[in-house]
Length: 545
Image 1 (cartoon, helix red, strand yellow):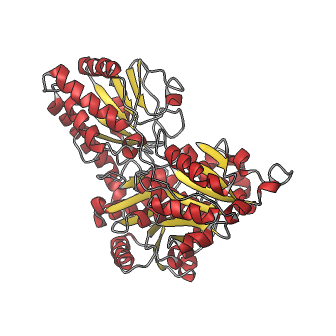
Image 2: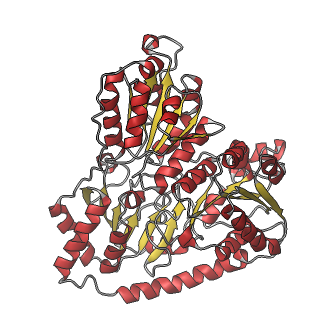
Image 3: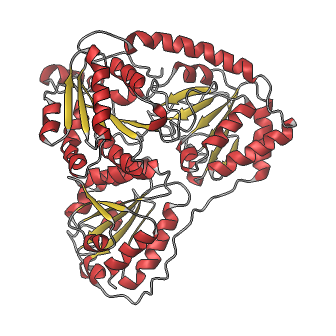
């Protein structure tokens, strides 16, 4: 058995059914021998975005794997791995290497050294007999602690080298960290004695598959739940205690309750200070539960810091709340829910005119509103792209099932949504997989519509075409005015049609719902779809103040 054959067999044992790639790579023939599906993208970054969306949709239980060729392939792949790292998404990255004799030679791209800052662990497989050991460590790293990408470089001579490994490899299980119960008791006491506690729930709740526990704790504490940008869908947004999501934009309920709360329980969140997370209110007591010790006392200084897997932390909190409250939980849940219901009515009333607007060019909120009328969120996976599509969609779309929405954005690379949606569709073929993107994002990755066609991945792309790069004028106003740097042109439905997708170009509001219905029918028949909506620039967004 060669090193590449052993890698392929281990991947098969780990439950890997497909590998995303841009050929040629040292292990691709061995993958085919093991009947692992090889999905070829048109660029390395999109292959990684596909693996990323796949891993997010499977909650990291089934890992997205990417392999690329040495040198240029590893160099081109950097953006996709950086995206996965900043958003804490587990990907196994297997780039090629020109050979052990070329290690350390000037001008030979050193993937291990260059990727060491954007992976949880980066290493080279030194020999065929070391394959099992390195792969075991890789999957252990991928399935423990904070999720993130792992790199294992595969030298071409190691891939061809014979090994004496008898294939005693056993799949690696998940490792969970339990919390300190003394800290749990203190945290619960603080929350039960608070007047207006709330929960700040991050992506860690999703990876821990702890949405049920989150809901139960929220109900016991009568505590409203804020979902972060990456954590959106970790709490049913139609639940009476849902505040909605918060990123660069947020619901009015989020801002209102942050201004009132006197205690915050943050779980499964890094509390990293970014443009894509709200600011913690001054004066509120903070409990921070995270699986990664590097998060504690980083940007936020908690009164209590708890290390542990979100599912185990929440389960322990539930048990302790029952113990300290005599099984009753905090009083006043109905009053809190009524308060939020009134705020929610006012919030929806404000946006209703835009969600139902008849103006032309089409208001992008009308597209979002009609999409919500035409689809079942329980059977849909939705994601956004960077910029306006993200900021318009995030606070208004109501996600009701875990990973029914893939929020992302610690890195805001234009075009990520296309590959992520393809990966999500592969992970959950029974769901309608949809990405909202702008014309600028399409310009980055649009040719990979052909990948969806060729690989028969029936996604629906909702392209909001306002012929502009929204938001940039506030950073470069003189350049925008003098050189027109924000304006774009193009008929993108024609481009996608030329690549083999089913497409429509929609210019009238009355055409939106019929077009979406036809698009869904086409996806059910196995065809990728791009709907291009000719929209106006909409300045009104729920940007947090």
